[in-house]
Image (tube, rainbow, N blue to C red; front, side):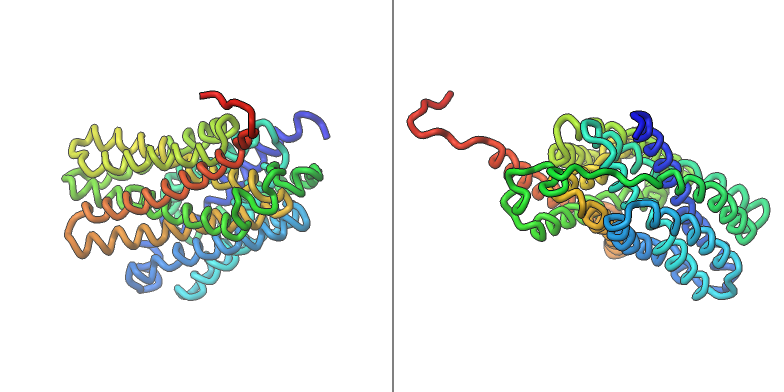
Length: 409
């Protein structure tokens, strides 16, 4: 394989993830038009997004398992066909039920799911010394989609309507994703040592002195904790800005800053993971996120809120990629697809639960103070798990003292 091919594959994966994210943001922007057209309330109109995310997360695990067995080509081809098919079906839907089925089943489970966890897992096999950087670049496509698609889609929603926009988006994705997926034909050659020991030969069977199931559960618990915390400012930043006396547009600008600097953070954290490891990167990002959450609680001026949004993007963007690096460090390479899928599913669940908890606490108390306290508490849970795993890793990597040989002070 030519030396330049892994970089080409990296660019292709980034483009596929950015295109795959279009359906996610389309399901967000269509909430109000769908509520009006189908004659339902906003609660029912929000179901397409919620069900899309459910299908997206569960599908990532299934498609990751398929990629472990067959390579990434089959899931990528399926996604490039089912995602446009789902958008066309949604554009033709005559009820909210059929619209939800199209968005969750075709767009989410069978479509966009192949452009997240499976792509992250696949690119991790093509890089060794710069694996963290490669993973950070690819997974930043999820945030890049958030910076690109909402403005474009809203423009065409206003210009020609949501159904016509969904149809045009389907044709665009089909024309772009199918040839890009074909570029992923070669399968990576897994090194036998890495395949058997996941790069950690001293404790492959019991990584960090734990069973593989225990470690996977702890990684998932950390993912839920960090993303419950992450959801507070990321999902509720617009109403939070309104509560502070600022226009909704200012809150939207803060969200754009979070996502934009989140792209930068994901790339930097990937580079950092190559130097200090996934566990240290996770603990650093989680600590910074907790500090910025405290900052948000006491930020009253517009300048301070903008600055906090930038800081939050730089802090939280690198947390999720670190889970992929941890999985690739302590688990067999042949299990990377589904294990990374499970880890990323836990983060999606955390975002969903965190968004609801923040809103429910606001309804109970009349302010977001309790919501921020709740977010910080779950962030501390994430930090405790990361610190505990890092302590185990350091202890296992430190050679035991030799009896009779003086040890340095």
